[in-house]
Image (cartoon, rainbow, N blue to C red; front, top):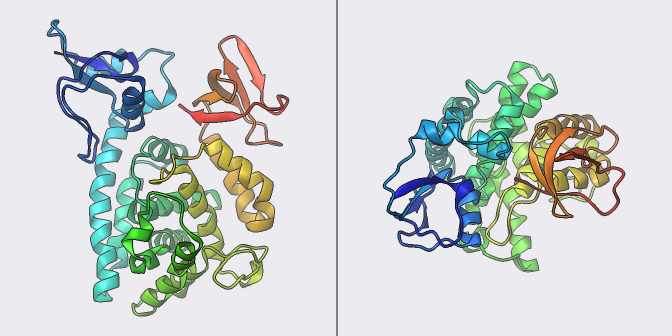
Length: 362
């Protein structure tokens, strides 16, 4: 039995033990023959190395695993190998458990402890002052298919970083983070079979899902909390051009905190996996924001978000739609979703290459 880096696994090898994710979910059972699909699954769940059956008896320590990551290893592999990433994952799981308890208290007991709620986010933000660092962590932790709890915690973290990009005063930053944590609390009133349906929703089911905004507002009416938090729950699906719900409000009638939450909410939802689809490539999400953002979202906020968010993916390794792989080396400010990518000795300016785009961050 020997421990092998996931990046060095090949089809035909056989697992020597059960393989679990960081949140103790069984990924692959012992004695499973590896296939390309199984190896891809290991990569998706951020598994850095596994034990396989052989006669060598050799074993790599954690330090050796990290040291053997080559210079050409994907940026994500290097992030996942760091002690900071492992600590973040551990803290995220612990914060998520506490957050579930806090949310259930709000819904069932009509009791809210804002300081305790915020501590779930600030535990993760502590020691991670850089927005780039937080997005590195979140992007490489995409196995959490949780459209309520993990999503709300993600949105709170994104909002906190976003608020700093906007130079918000400290009090507003706390308020925005709390809005992010509670924006989807109304989903607690939606039947679980709809929330977790492993397929696209029917029109009737989608109509039920949409009621979570009003449900959230009603839940928060029963507790002592700022109106901005209630409005964020009610209005985060409103759009500046009047195309949103539940009321079809336009810019000036939408709470400013809800206008910020709307951007963070959509970004996290699109880049996270769901039971019926995989995560969308962040550059595809950026492209969507570029094409419709100025109409649907407040320009004061969406332009700042896009300018900063795209820079969090500098130096990331990407796969292009033509099958080539390379590193993002230069951002095009006129077309943020189409950066310069270095593929070996070749430099590809995606803004000049029609029909080629970034398919995935790897």
